[in-house]
Length: 236
Image (tube, rainbow, N blue to C red; front, side):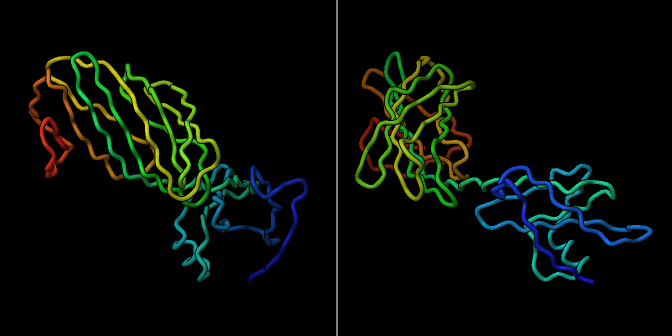
């Protein structure tokens, strides 16, 4: 038997911690108690009821004969209340990143550029990983034809927050310059990259001043690409 019902929750917008009414058959014993939730595309839902065991959407559909796959499904304990956490779905961020390192006698300068594409909702900041001891000297965002400066806050672990002037969706360009100390001798290419921006690694360029000589000893994790520019210029 299938029973379809609707109800309204007072003093709620549909986002946040929601307690649902309990609907159940009057019976001597309940053998299975499952819950499936379908949320609209901009939202994500999870059950905060404990104990709850998540099952696959396909397993739920096979057990209950439903052709429409839910967003999430759970197997619940008999006496567990029905409670949901409904939140906006986080935006999806993809970026093409390029880092150019300029090696000088005492310091290393870096120019970081990223073409960022944001879908499924706006973002208001980006997080950039910097090596220890490095500082951002300038940061801008270009959306369309307008270039604007970014406010930068440095957190723990070398993570910088780049605050956008307004919520951004679609494609925009980040340009960040930074500098840090250079240890003469064996030097490892430091990681400068956006966090939560997809799996595509950045393209890395190495430039040096005339007073330095460089030689690539090894580049694990990097793949050399053809470069037709004149020395001093190396590409990884």
